[in-house]
Image (cartoon, rainbow, N blue to C red):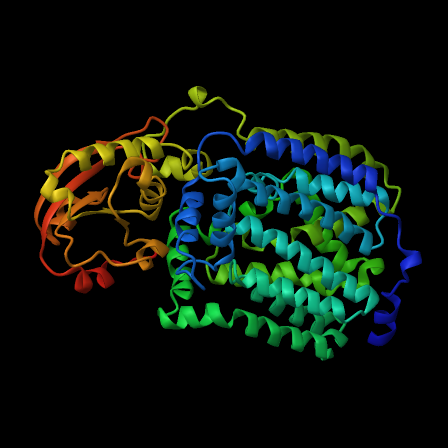
Length: 505
C-alpha cells in the first residue's frame, strides 16, 4: 500500500503547473524595494559588529556559531570597508531567493499560479521572515538554507532523483557552518518518513551518503569545537537561561506562530492540517509531522521561538495549495483583508521611523522587547567615551593598556572602530569574543568598559571610574549609562584569570 501511495506522489515534469513568473516576480520586487530601502537605516546591529570582528579573525569555528557568517562579513568588508549597506546585501539576496523557492515549493505540491503567489505573499508579509533580511544574521542565512533544503527534499519525493538528496546534503553541510539546528530537521524528517512514508527515503543510499558527506565537510569545524571544549553545545544552556527571562516555554508557541504573520500564520496552521489530512498531499504527509516534532524538541531544550522558522515556507506552501484548491467563497473573501493586515504589520515592523521620533527606554527589560531596534544605536557614543578615557591616561599607562569590555557587543564596536579611534587591543570575556585571545600578562593597566565595581575589585588592586558612555537610544548597560573603569595591578596574571572569566551568557 505504501508503495502505491508513493507512486501516486510522482508526477512527470509535464504535469507540473506553470510557474507564476509574473506574480511571484512582482512580490519579490516589492520585497526587494522594502529591504533595500531599509538596510541603510540607523546603525550596525550589535551582532553585525561581532560578525565583522569575527571575520577579521577567520577560523574554522567560533564558540557560538559556525564560520560562514563571519566569512560573509569579512568578504563584504573587503569589498566595501565599513559599509553597513554592503554588509547587509547578502542577507537581502538570500531572503529574496527564499521567497522564490517558497513559491517553487507550492508548485511542487501541485499548486496553481495563485497558490504560488500567495505562498510568496505569505513569506513577504511575515514580520520575521522578511524583516530579518534587512540585516546580516545567522538566522537569516539559516532560514534561507532550510527553505532550499525543504524544496530539494520535496522535489525528491515527487521525482525520486537521488541527486537531489546529494544537493540537499551539500546545503546541509553549508548550514552546519552557520548553526547546528538543521540536524533537528533531518531527524524529524526521518521519523516522519518512518511513520507516514515514503519509507523508501530512509532506505536510499543517497540519504546516508549525503549524511556522511555532511560529517566530512563539517570535520574542521567539529575539530575546532572539540579542541575548545565544545562551547557551541554549551550555548544551549546560555540561550535556555535567556529564554527563561522572557517567558521561555510558556510563550514559545504563540511567538512562533506570530513570527509567521497574520496571513502566514493562517497558512502555516492550514498547511500542517492539510499535510496531515488532505488526500492530495498524502505523499508529503511526513512533512506535517516535522513542525510538531521540532516544536517538542525546541520546547524541551528551551530554544528560541524562531528556531523552526526555516520549515515555514513548506508549510505555507502546503497551506496556500489547500487554500486555493477548492472554490470556497469564504477563503477568497478572507484573503484580501488577511493579506492587507499582514502587509500593514510588516510595514510597521520595518525601520521607517525617524531616529528623532523614537522614544528611549530606561531599563534593559524594555530594550530587550525591541532589541532589534535599540541594538542599532549608541556605538559611536561608546567609542567616543572610551577613546576619551584612554587619552586621559598618562602616556606610560597608555603604552601598556588594553581594553576589556563587559559585553561582546561593546567589544565588537570598539574593535571595529579601533584604528579610527586610536584604541589599544580590545578583549571581552563574553560569548565568542572571549575565545579571540587572552590579554597579555604584561597588561597591568586596563580600561574596563561596563561591569560591576565590586566584581572588578576582586580582580584588581585599584579600580577608579574615569568615564561614562551614554546614548539617548542605546540599551541600558550596553550603550546607555555605561561606566568606564581604569583598573590597575591585576591580582593574578591574565593567563590564569581569563579562563575563569569566560562566559557564554
